Image (cartoon, rainbow, N blue to C red; front, side, top):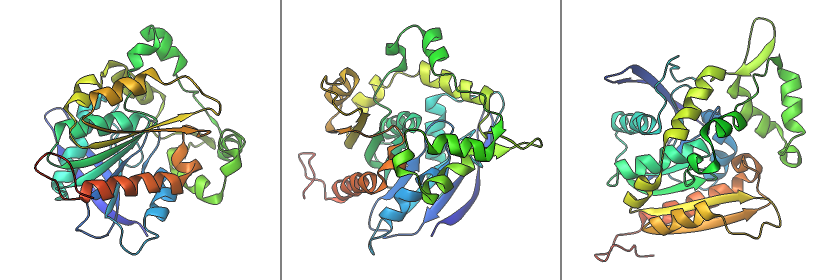
Length: 298
């Protein structure tokens, strides 16, 4: 189903970085759906969602991207990995693939890249979906070092089967399947001793995290003019409204806010059909003709 796109070399002033993407051809009258994974993940993470999106005969073109440091993309040891630069990477990739109109979907850390890209490229980005990320400011969670410590990942170094078994009994346990396993396997590599670690690596992970801690999405959110779907995954029984979600919605020109009770953070693997439905709704809205008052006809 996925048609690989050749590695694209992005010539920058600071570094040469190649991103890698999987492309699925679709109806070119529709905006291209650009899928941006979260921290430590990679483009195959979106496999279950892509299968739902392509189930219909008429579906948009789809581009699932390995961002810098992740998957098969280049992994500069010393970065940089700041959010605006990562958004620049995606913008240059879209330039080289002649994508002039798109809907961008970001999960977790990828949500910040999505928000920044929409602010940078208002003529190109016709709609965005931010899945449990992109609308919060990590600096609001407390002291920087305390937040950094709390979000520091385990260093892993265990057999791959043991690692998969651990994940299979975690939050995704009720939804575990061969599809979910295949979506997660490319996140890891096995060393010469047979131990699995993330392909991103611990040190690069911390650099990406520092870039997220440095990023304030407020300016970008205020600049976004397209329909913006914000999805918050939360525990069952959550009553109190999310302050960051409310603040973000108040900054946006065209907010659409969803609170999914019972959703785990990796909701594209938990409920891929639901995620695909939100993406389709965003594509439908983004593809509608724009009126002179800035609204879109149904």
